[in-house]
Image 1: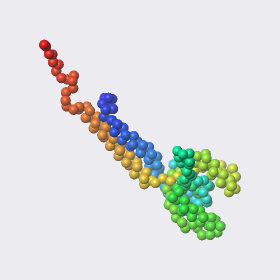
Image 2: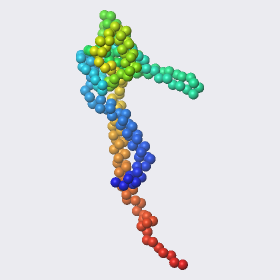
Image 3: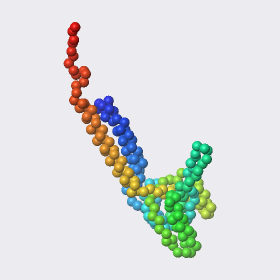
Image 4: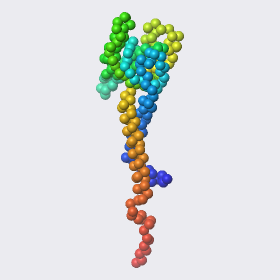
Length: 225
């Protein structure tokens, strides 16, 4: 391969297209693989199905104990002022062996709050929760800060350190739209194939040249005065 010809064939437009395609592939590849895994529902968790990092979760949320942390983002302006906005809450979901976290977006808070209230009434002897909220997501490990709030809440509920240790690594279910992920992944593959095709075509054209003779190919002429 002629390296110089290859880089001429690439051009700035090909680099931009390649970077865009690779970026989409990087953002969607992991969750695309997760979307192909067997689905674990929230009912399955109550029946003893084991969750692992990278598990694929989908289904209606039957019970929520409460939320144990709130996620906010802070925007700082040029005049020195700041503005905080809520990005959702982390809820405590019961399983057969303990609890896991569930990240609810701000748009989910209202419905998840209803399930929380209905769960409390159910634990006090009332009817089972009737509010339905379908959630999809992937299981991730909690970071240290979130795990701190998680353990603090469970300790306030009366759990001992040995009981917390027996629950294993603290996990959280984070929202993922698997439909959007599949679309993004398909587009990234299409763009990668398109980029390769365009590069090969331009590479071949560079090899063929314009059809005009180059200066060194022209016959030399000697002019005598």
